[in-house]
Length: 257
Image (cartoon, rainbow, N blue to C red):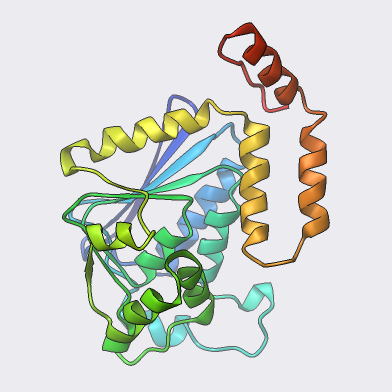
């Protein structure tokens, strides 16, 4: 049975939970529903999203018996020929507001890549991480490899991909993949607190800088667009409110305009 639940907290934070009886493995059905949910959030006043899994797993990877058909290589890399995994990763990255991966348990393969698309990654000490295509004879899609290299560096990325070993949360934090490692019983509250802090920041600033981060990942591209993002924020009411509140020594009330 494939399940994906979504809850809106305080009218501003979206909690998406993957639930699959086989350690939350991913397949096109689940990924398409994630894409649909994320696309729907752009029409709502969602300021932050949390992506997590049920039980003892964030996601144990892609459904292996679907790999051959779903990951087939195509010479035409147009939007219509991107894999559903690629599309879901881009949906996470292109959501105007931050996405936090809350990880407890296994975070492997496609689950690892999905977590790597998030803006923050928080895990319990018991969590285990790995990318295991070398264990099954799959050459992992280069788009996913590039994303992981960007986060952890080429040296450790080679170890991840070429050994297929599972690594501890402590090691992943040392390599820069995890922002925080938090005790299991405190994981939800800690993640929700971070999301709450983000939601009270200026929506103009947050969505502008998130867009900038995505663009900056493609070195030297969209430089004109980045300049425009900064210039546009200078005339937004959020900036005026933020400056005024600073001098009045009060909390700003941002409208996202």
